[in-house]
Image (cartoon, rainbow, N blue to C red; front, side, top):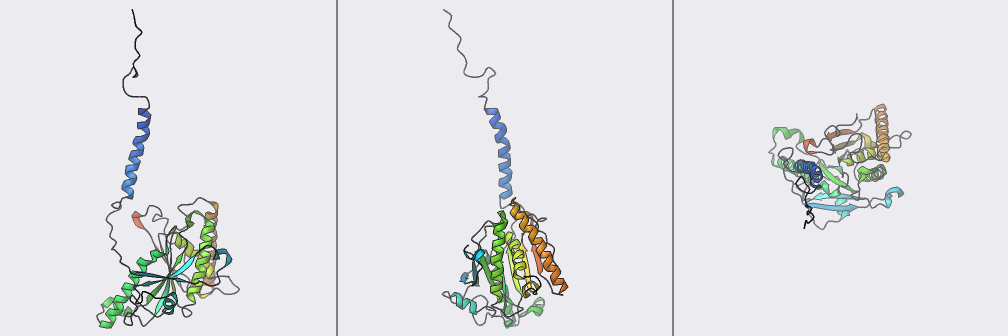
Length: 319
């Protein structure tokens, strides 16, 4: 009796199931890309990290910003004052404000002061950033000013320090923008800038007229700061702009110059276009009035920054 031949479960050509080859073709490139991306994101990529560790003893004091415009009053934005290692851990916000402009350094002691007083510094976080990021720059500036003040008191200054033997300290403030992702929407950037402009005006009232203001902004915070400086210096004539635009220094860290690296929405493009037009207009106005304009320092992130490249973070047009 002839029995029917049993069909082999495997294909005639031998080998494995038919899905193995297509899966391998898809997975191998993905594995190569994953390996490369892991390398790019590793701390070792871009060379050794030469940044020194910063140690802080932070204290944050929430300040009341009166007369907020309705467009930003209901969004929970806040303004904080920073103190490095305050002498009184239980210090209230009113006590912190009372020391504005007095040159009080870390510790708040009588010795740790500068006779030239202090100027306001405002920190603006970037996309999704926190106001608490001010602690690094604030602690380092306080530490540097304290070291120079103590060296001057001990009369052990180096030659480089003679012209600045009595340094000016910085009273640091920071805006809390709810960690919003402003890089993705132009309307958020406009709203944040409106609050920052209001905070700038409020901080300026704590100091004598003409005291320069230092604005330090990270990433998209630099874009918000540029817009806020325009807002804080308007309306355009008549009447004349406020003193702010002719007394401000803006330092940006890895701030995109002409567009958001994360958004393709038309509102963001319109925001940048409007910002560039108003900034040019403000500069033209200051030039006609023989004002100094806004001093700008643009710091790039370098090779480690893969979001805002060195070319994208170049200095924007400024007088």
